[in-house]
Image 1: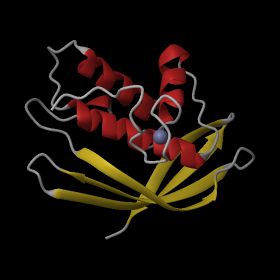
Image 2 (image 1 turned 45 degrees about the vertical axis):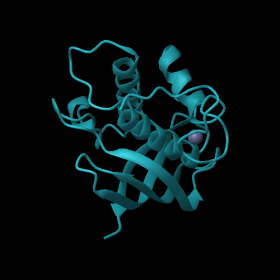
Image 3 (image 1 turned 90 degrees about the vertical axis):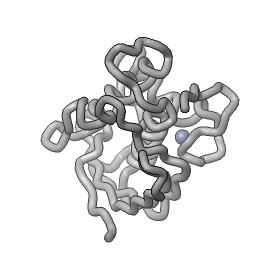
Image 4 (image 1 turned 180 degrees about the vertical axis):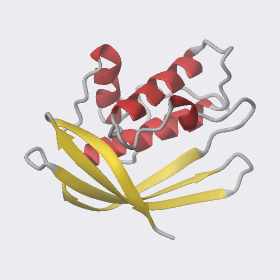
Amino acid sequence: MTHEQSAHEPCPCGRGLTYPECCGRWHACHAADGTLAAPTAEDLMRSRYTAFARIGAAGPVDQDRHDDAARTVAAMVAYLRATWAPETRPAAADLTPGPGEAPTVFTRLAVTDATGGGPFDMAGTVSFTALGRDASGGRVRLTERSRFRREGGLWRYVDGDVAG
Ligand SMILES: [Zn+2]
């Protein structure tokens, strides 16, 4: 399935805004000049979920593809890596499916709790459940309490506790 996010579709993070009004703002800032602009830990968490959702919606992308879907995936992988703390940041190859593999398709996000994470905090946590389906069509349910850190005014994801 190849699917480009249209300007009028709801943002995948489910806040009720369109993508350009919501997580797309932070993605666009990063694509333009590398700026990380999400003002709160929750905004950053939502924009990272949306990046994963857009990677999933793009479908399998191999290295020979240079279309819009491939560009979207490359931009989202770059955003995810930039918003990851350096000490826990994965390689780009670990954020995309291997050749011929389908990515996890995320379909729903519920943010259940947040502590700290505001414009004047240095740390914060965001708890969420993300729903989706994996390459074989099985249901994916990820519940995590994520930790975020603000350095130099920029929020980054550090790590998280995944609920069993
Ligand atoms: Zn959003």
